[in-house]
Image (tube, rainbow, N blue to C red; front, side):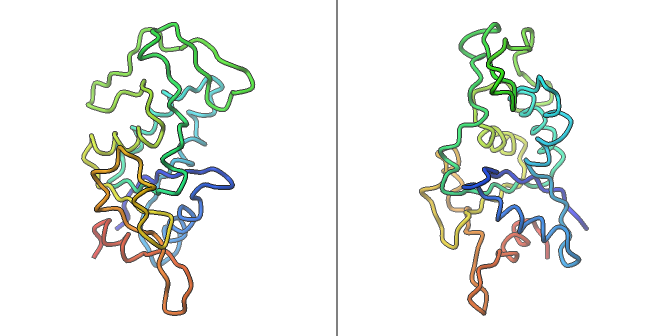
Length: 202
């Protein structure tokens, strides 16, 4: 039986955590593991971000939808995670409806006026409001917690790295676990047993 699992990670090309995501996807695609993964990269490459006027708040609304459809959320924490601020530039909450922002992936075109003049990011279905100054990963975390999803936090490391954990995740520090282990041959491999147990598989 497969499960829909939302993956939140830093996808920076050179210093992100794609190696963990790739390992998780390998497990999801082979014949030995039964997990249906939904990750941030798949979300932002879809129809929402294809809109040339896609804003950070539009992405956050889509993240809410994907998290709601998932049974669990895996947060991958690397050494740069706590310093990432992508998605946090919204000025609406303190500058009013006529503030400016930069559309997603449109940095070269500069800022434009907020397109949601009569919307305040308040959800009718108890979602986290999508107009906020949270980074993308903080928004995802707060939405997952608000919707009582199973939250799994792993460090992109062979060891526990509590100092990598963003402050808003500190209450989950005791649950955070290294993703990598050494196998019997000394090779670094993903700890599938931990992920399997955390997802509730026998």
